[in-house]
Length: 144
Picture 1: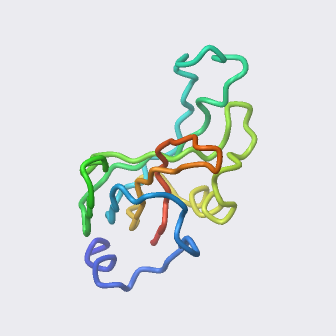
Picture 2: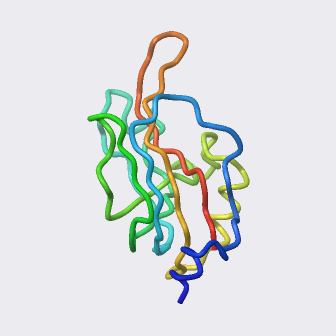
Picture 3: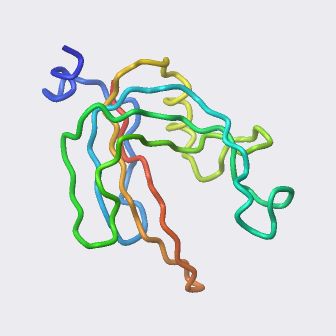
């Protein structure tokens, strides 16, 4: 019944990104997902700055994807459909992740484990003015 309400548009949006995120869109994911809770993720020791001078790891909101309601992959490099999704809420020291909008963080912290929500995100390829490039996965919508 919850899934039917989400698909029929009767769900209340608790977060929606205003404006398009910067970057080349590699894939767009529109899903129904189950909030699994928060997880502390340690640094994975991937760079020479790890673990003391890096910003890796932290507190992540974790979701299991129940079903896809929409999916686009305009090029070859976008993510395929995913069974799980996670986004960082806080850094390892417990301070809020500066990349996460305050409204989204508040919405995520209001969820209860097992709660089914509408969750949309975009997989982007971002280029800085200096020419650095990296992938980002940006939540665009969260609905109860």
